[in-house]
Amino acid sequence: MGSMDIGVIGLAVMGQNLALNIESRGYTVAVYNRTEARTRAFIESQSKSKAIEAAYDIESFVALLSRPRKVLLMVKSGAATDALIEALLPLLEPGDILMDGGNAHYSDTDRRYAAAERLGLHYLGIGISGGETGALLGPAIMVGGSLSGYEQVAPLLESLAAVGPHGSCCALLGPRSAGHYVKMIHNGIEYALMQALCEAYDLMHRGLEMSADEMADVFGRWNDAELESYLVAITEKILRQQDPEGTGPLVEMILDTAAQKGTGKWSSQSALDLGTPSASIAAAVFARITSSLKAERSAAEMLLAGPHPRLSMRRDEALDALFSTLLLAFLTVYGQGFRQLQDASQDRAYALDLSEVARVWMAGCIIRARLLVPMGKAFARQPDLAYLLLAEPFQSLWNKHQASFRSMVACAHEAGIPVPAMSSALNFVDTYRTARLPANLLQAQRDYFGAHTYQRIDRDGIEHTNWEQVR
Ligand code: 2AM
Image (tube, helix red, strand yellow):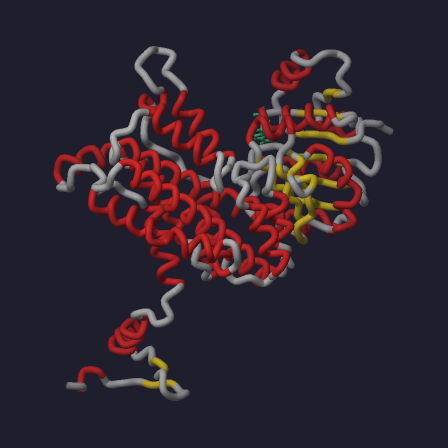
């Protein structure tokens, strides 16, 4: 029988860095990768004193593990994960713990969880965020699965996670695919925060004609205030980076088309399925899709008129308004993500504790931000909070900054600078805070052409009007 504490399958950068992280916490690690050369390169790059042992076929890998065996899959999501699980299942025994640390779709995790549990295995779907550095030094770890499975790996997982202001950023968040669902929403939020930051950069760059260094100074100042977060911090650093080829700021030399796949898209698909209004997250996905139409955009710039992209505000005024805008856009986006988790938790019986989700996101992950501390408190006080902005201190922040948010979005529209994340955030909150929407006319239209019926505001019951006959 083997003696290694845990086995990691898949030695791309995330798998390698996680294996090293686990080893650095005092555990012994077995590693295996489909392509042998990658395993050899990894082992050769490490000092011999490391408690990491490699296997070159899956049977030998499993034989290295102590019982109950703990296997962490760090391979490409989708068919690769299924193929590996199929190869592993006959080699594992009841009581062993199989963990998927990739970005699996939650429905795949539900299916794999059910199949593994039928065989008496514990299956944990684990969302890991923090990029390559996070994997090595301490990521945020969002776990879904059974309590008995989690309890056996909790000391290990909690030791390798980042430590935030409220402890280790690793927790069992719910049953089955809850961990992967939360990670998916984490990534949806990440998409929208990044898009809002890109819009702020565009407004400064084109709208105020600021240099990269000046913009970096502004992001740096924001990072010392309420907006303190990983994404604001890296934006400052990116803007300071010079092109080694001597052309100036490197960011200006990067092609302006972005990919969107996997979790960001899935989170919007799930929002539509649930009927939850994650509009700004969807706007960010669509913004990436539109960015990929580079040739069309270049042609359209010659054909479709617009104003000179210059903001009609003094620079100092504009920067104050931009701070308000980014702050409220961020809050709106986190609020939408938490709301989607609230709705998914109901629909999928995850029983999520959103203060615990906020706690796990406080360090290690890409959307870590100082604002998550008061968010966690808000959900601890009011676990069924429908929307973040309804709670303090967020309600007061909205009330304080909303006028500037409006001025900036209006100014951006006047200047023809696209702000899909910011403007969808403003639209969302304005819709949410409007007691009477024009959906009355919508109901009339539906009744007109499809006899869908409607309800009156002054009495109960279902109504239908023969609209063609009304004068
Ligand atoms: P590879 O080095 O053999 O390509 C990220 O791509 C990780 O997933 C890599 O470690 C890769 O292994 C692994 N991977 C991709 N497809 C796989 C498959 N079908 N079976 C096993 N591992 C796979």
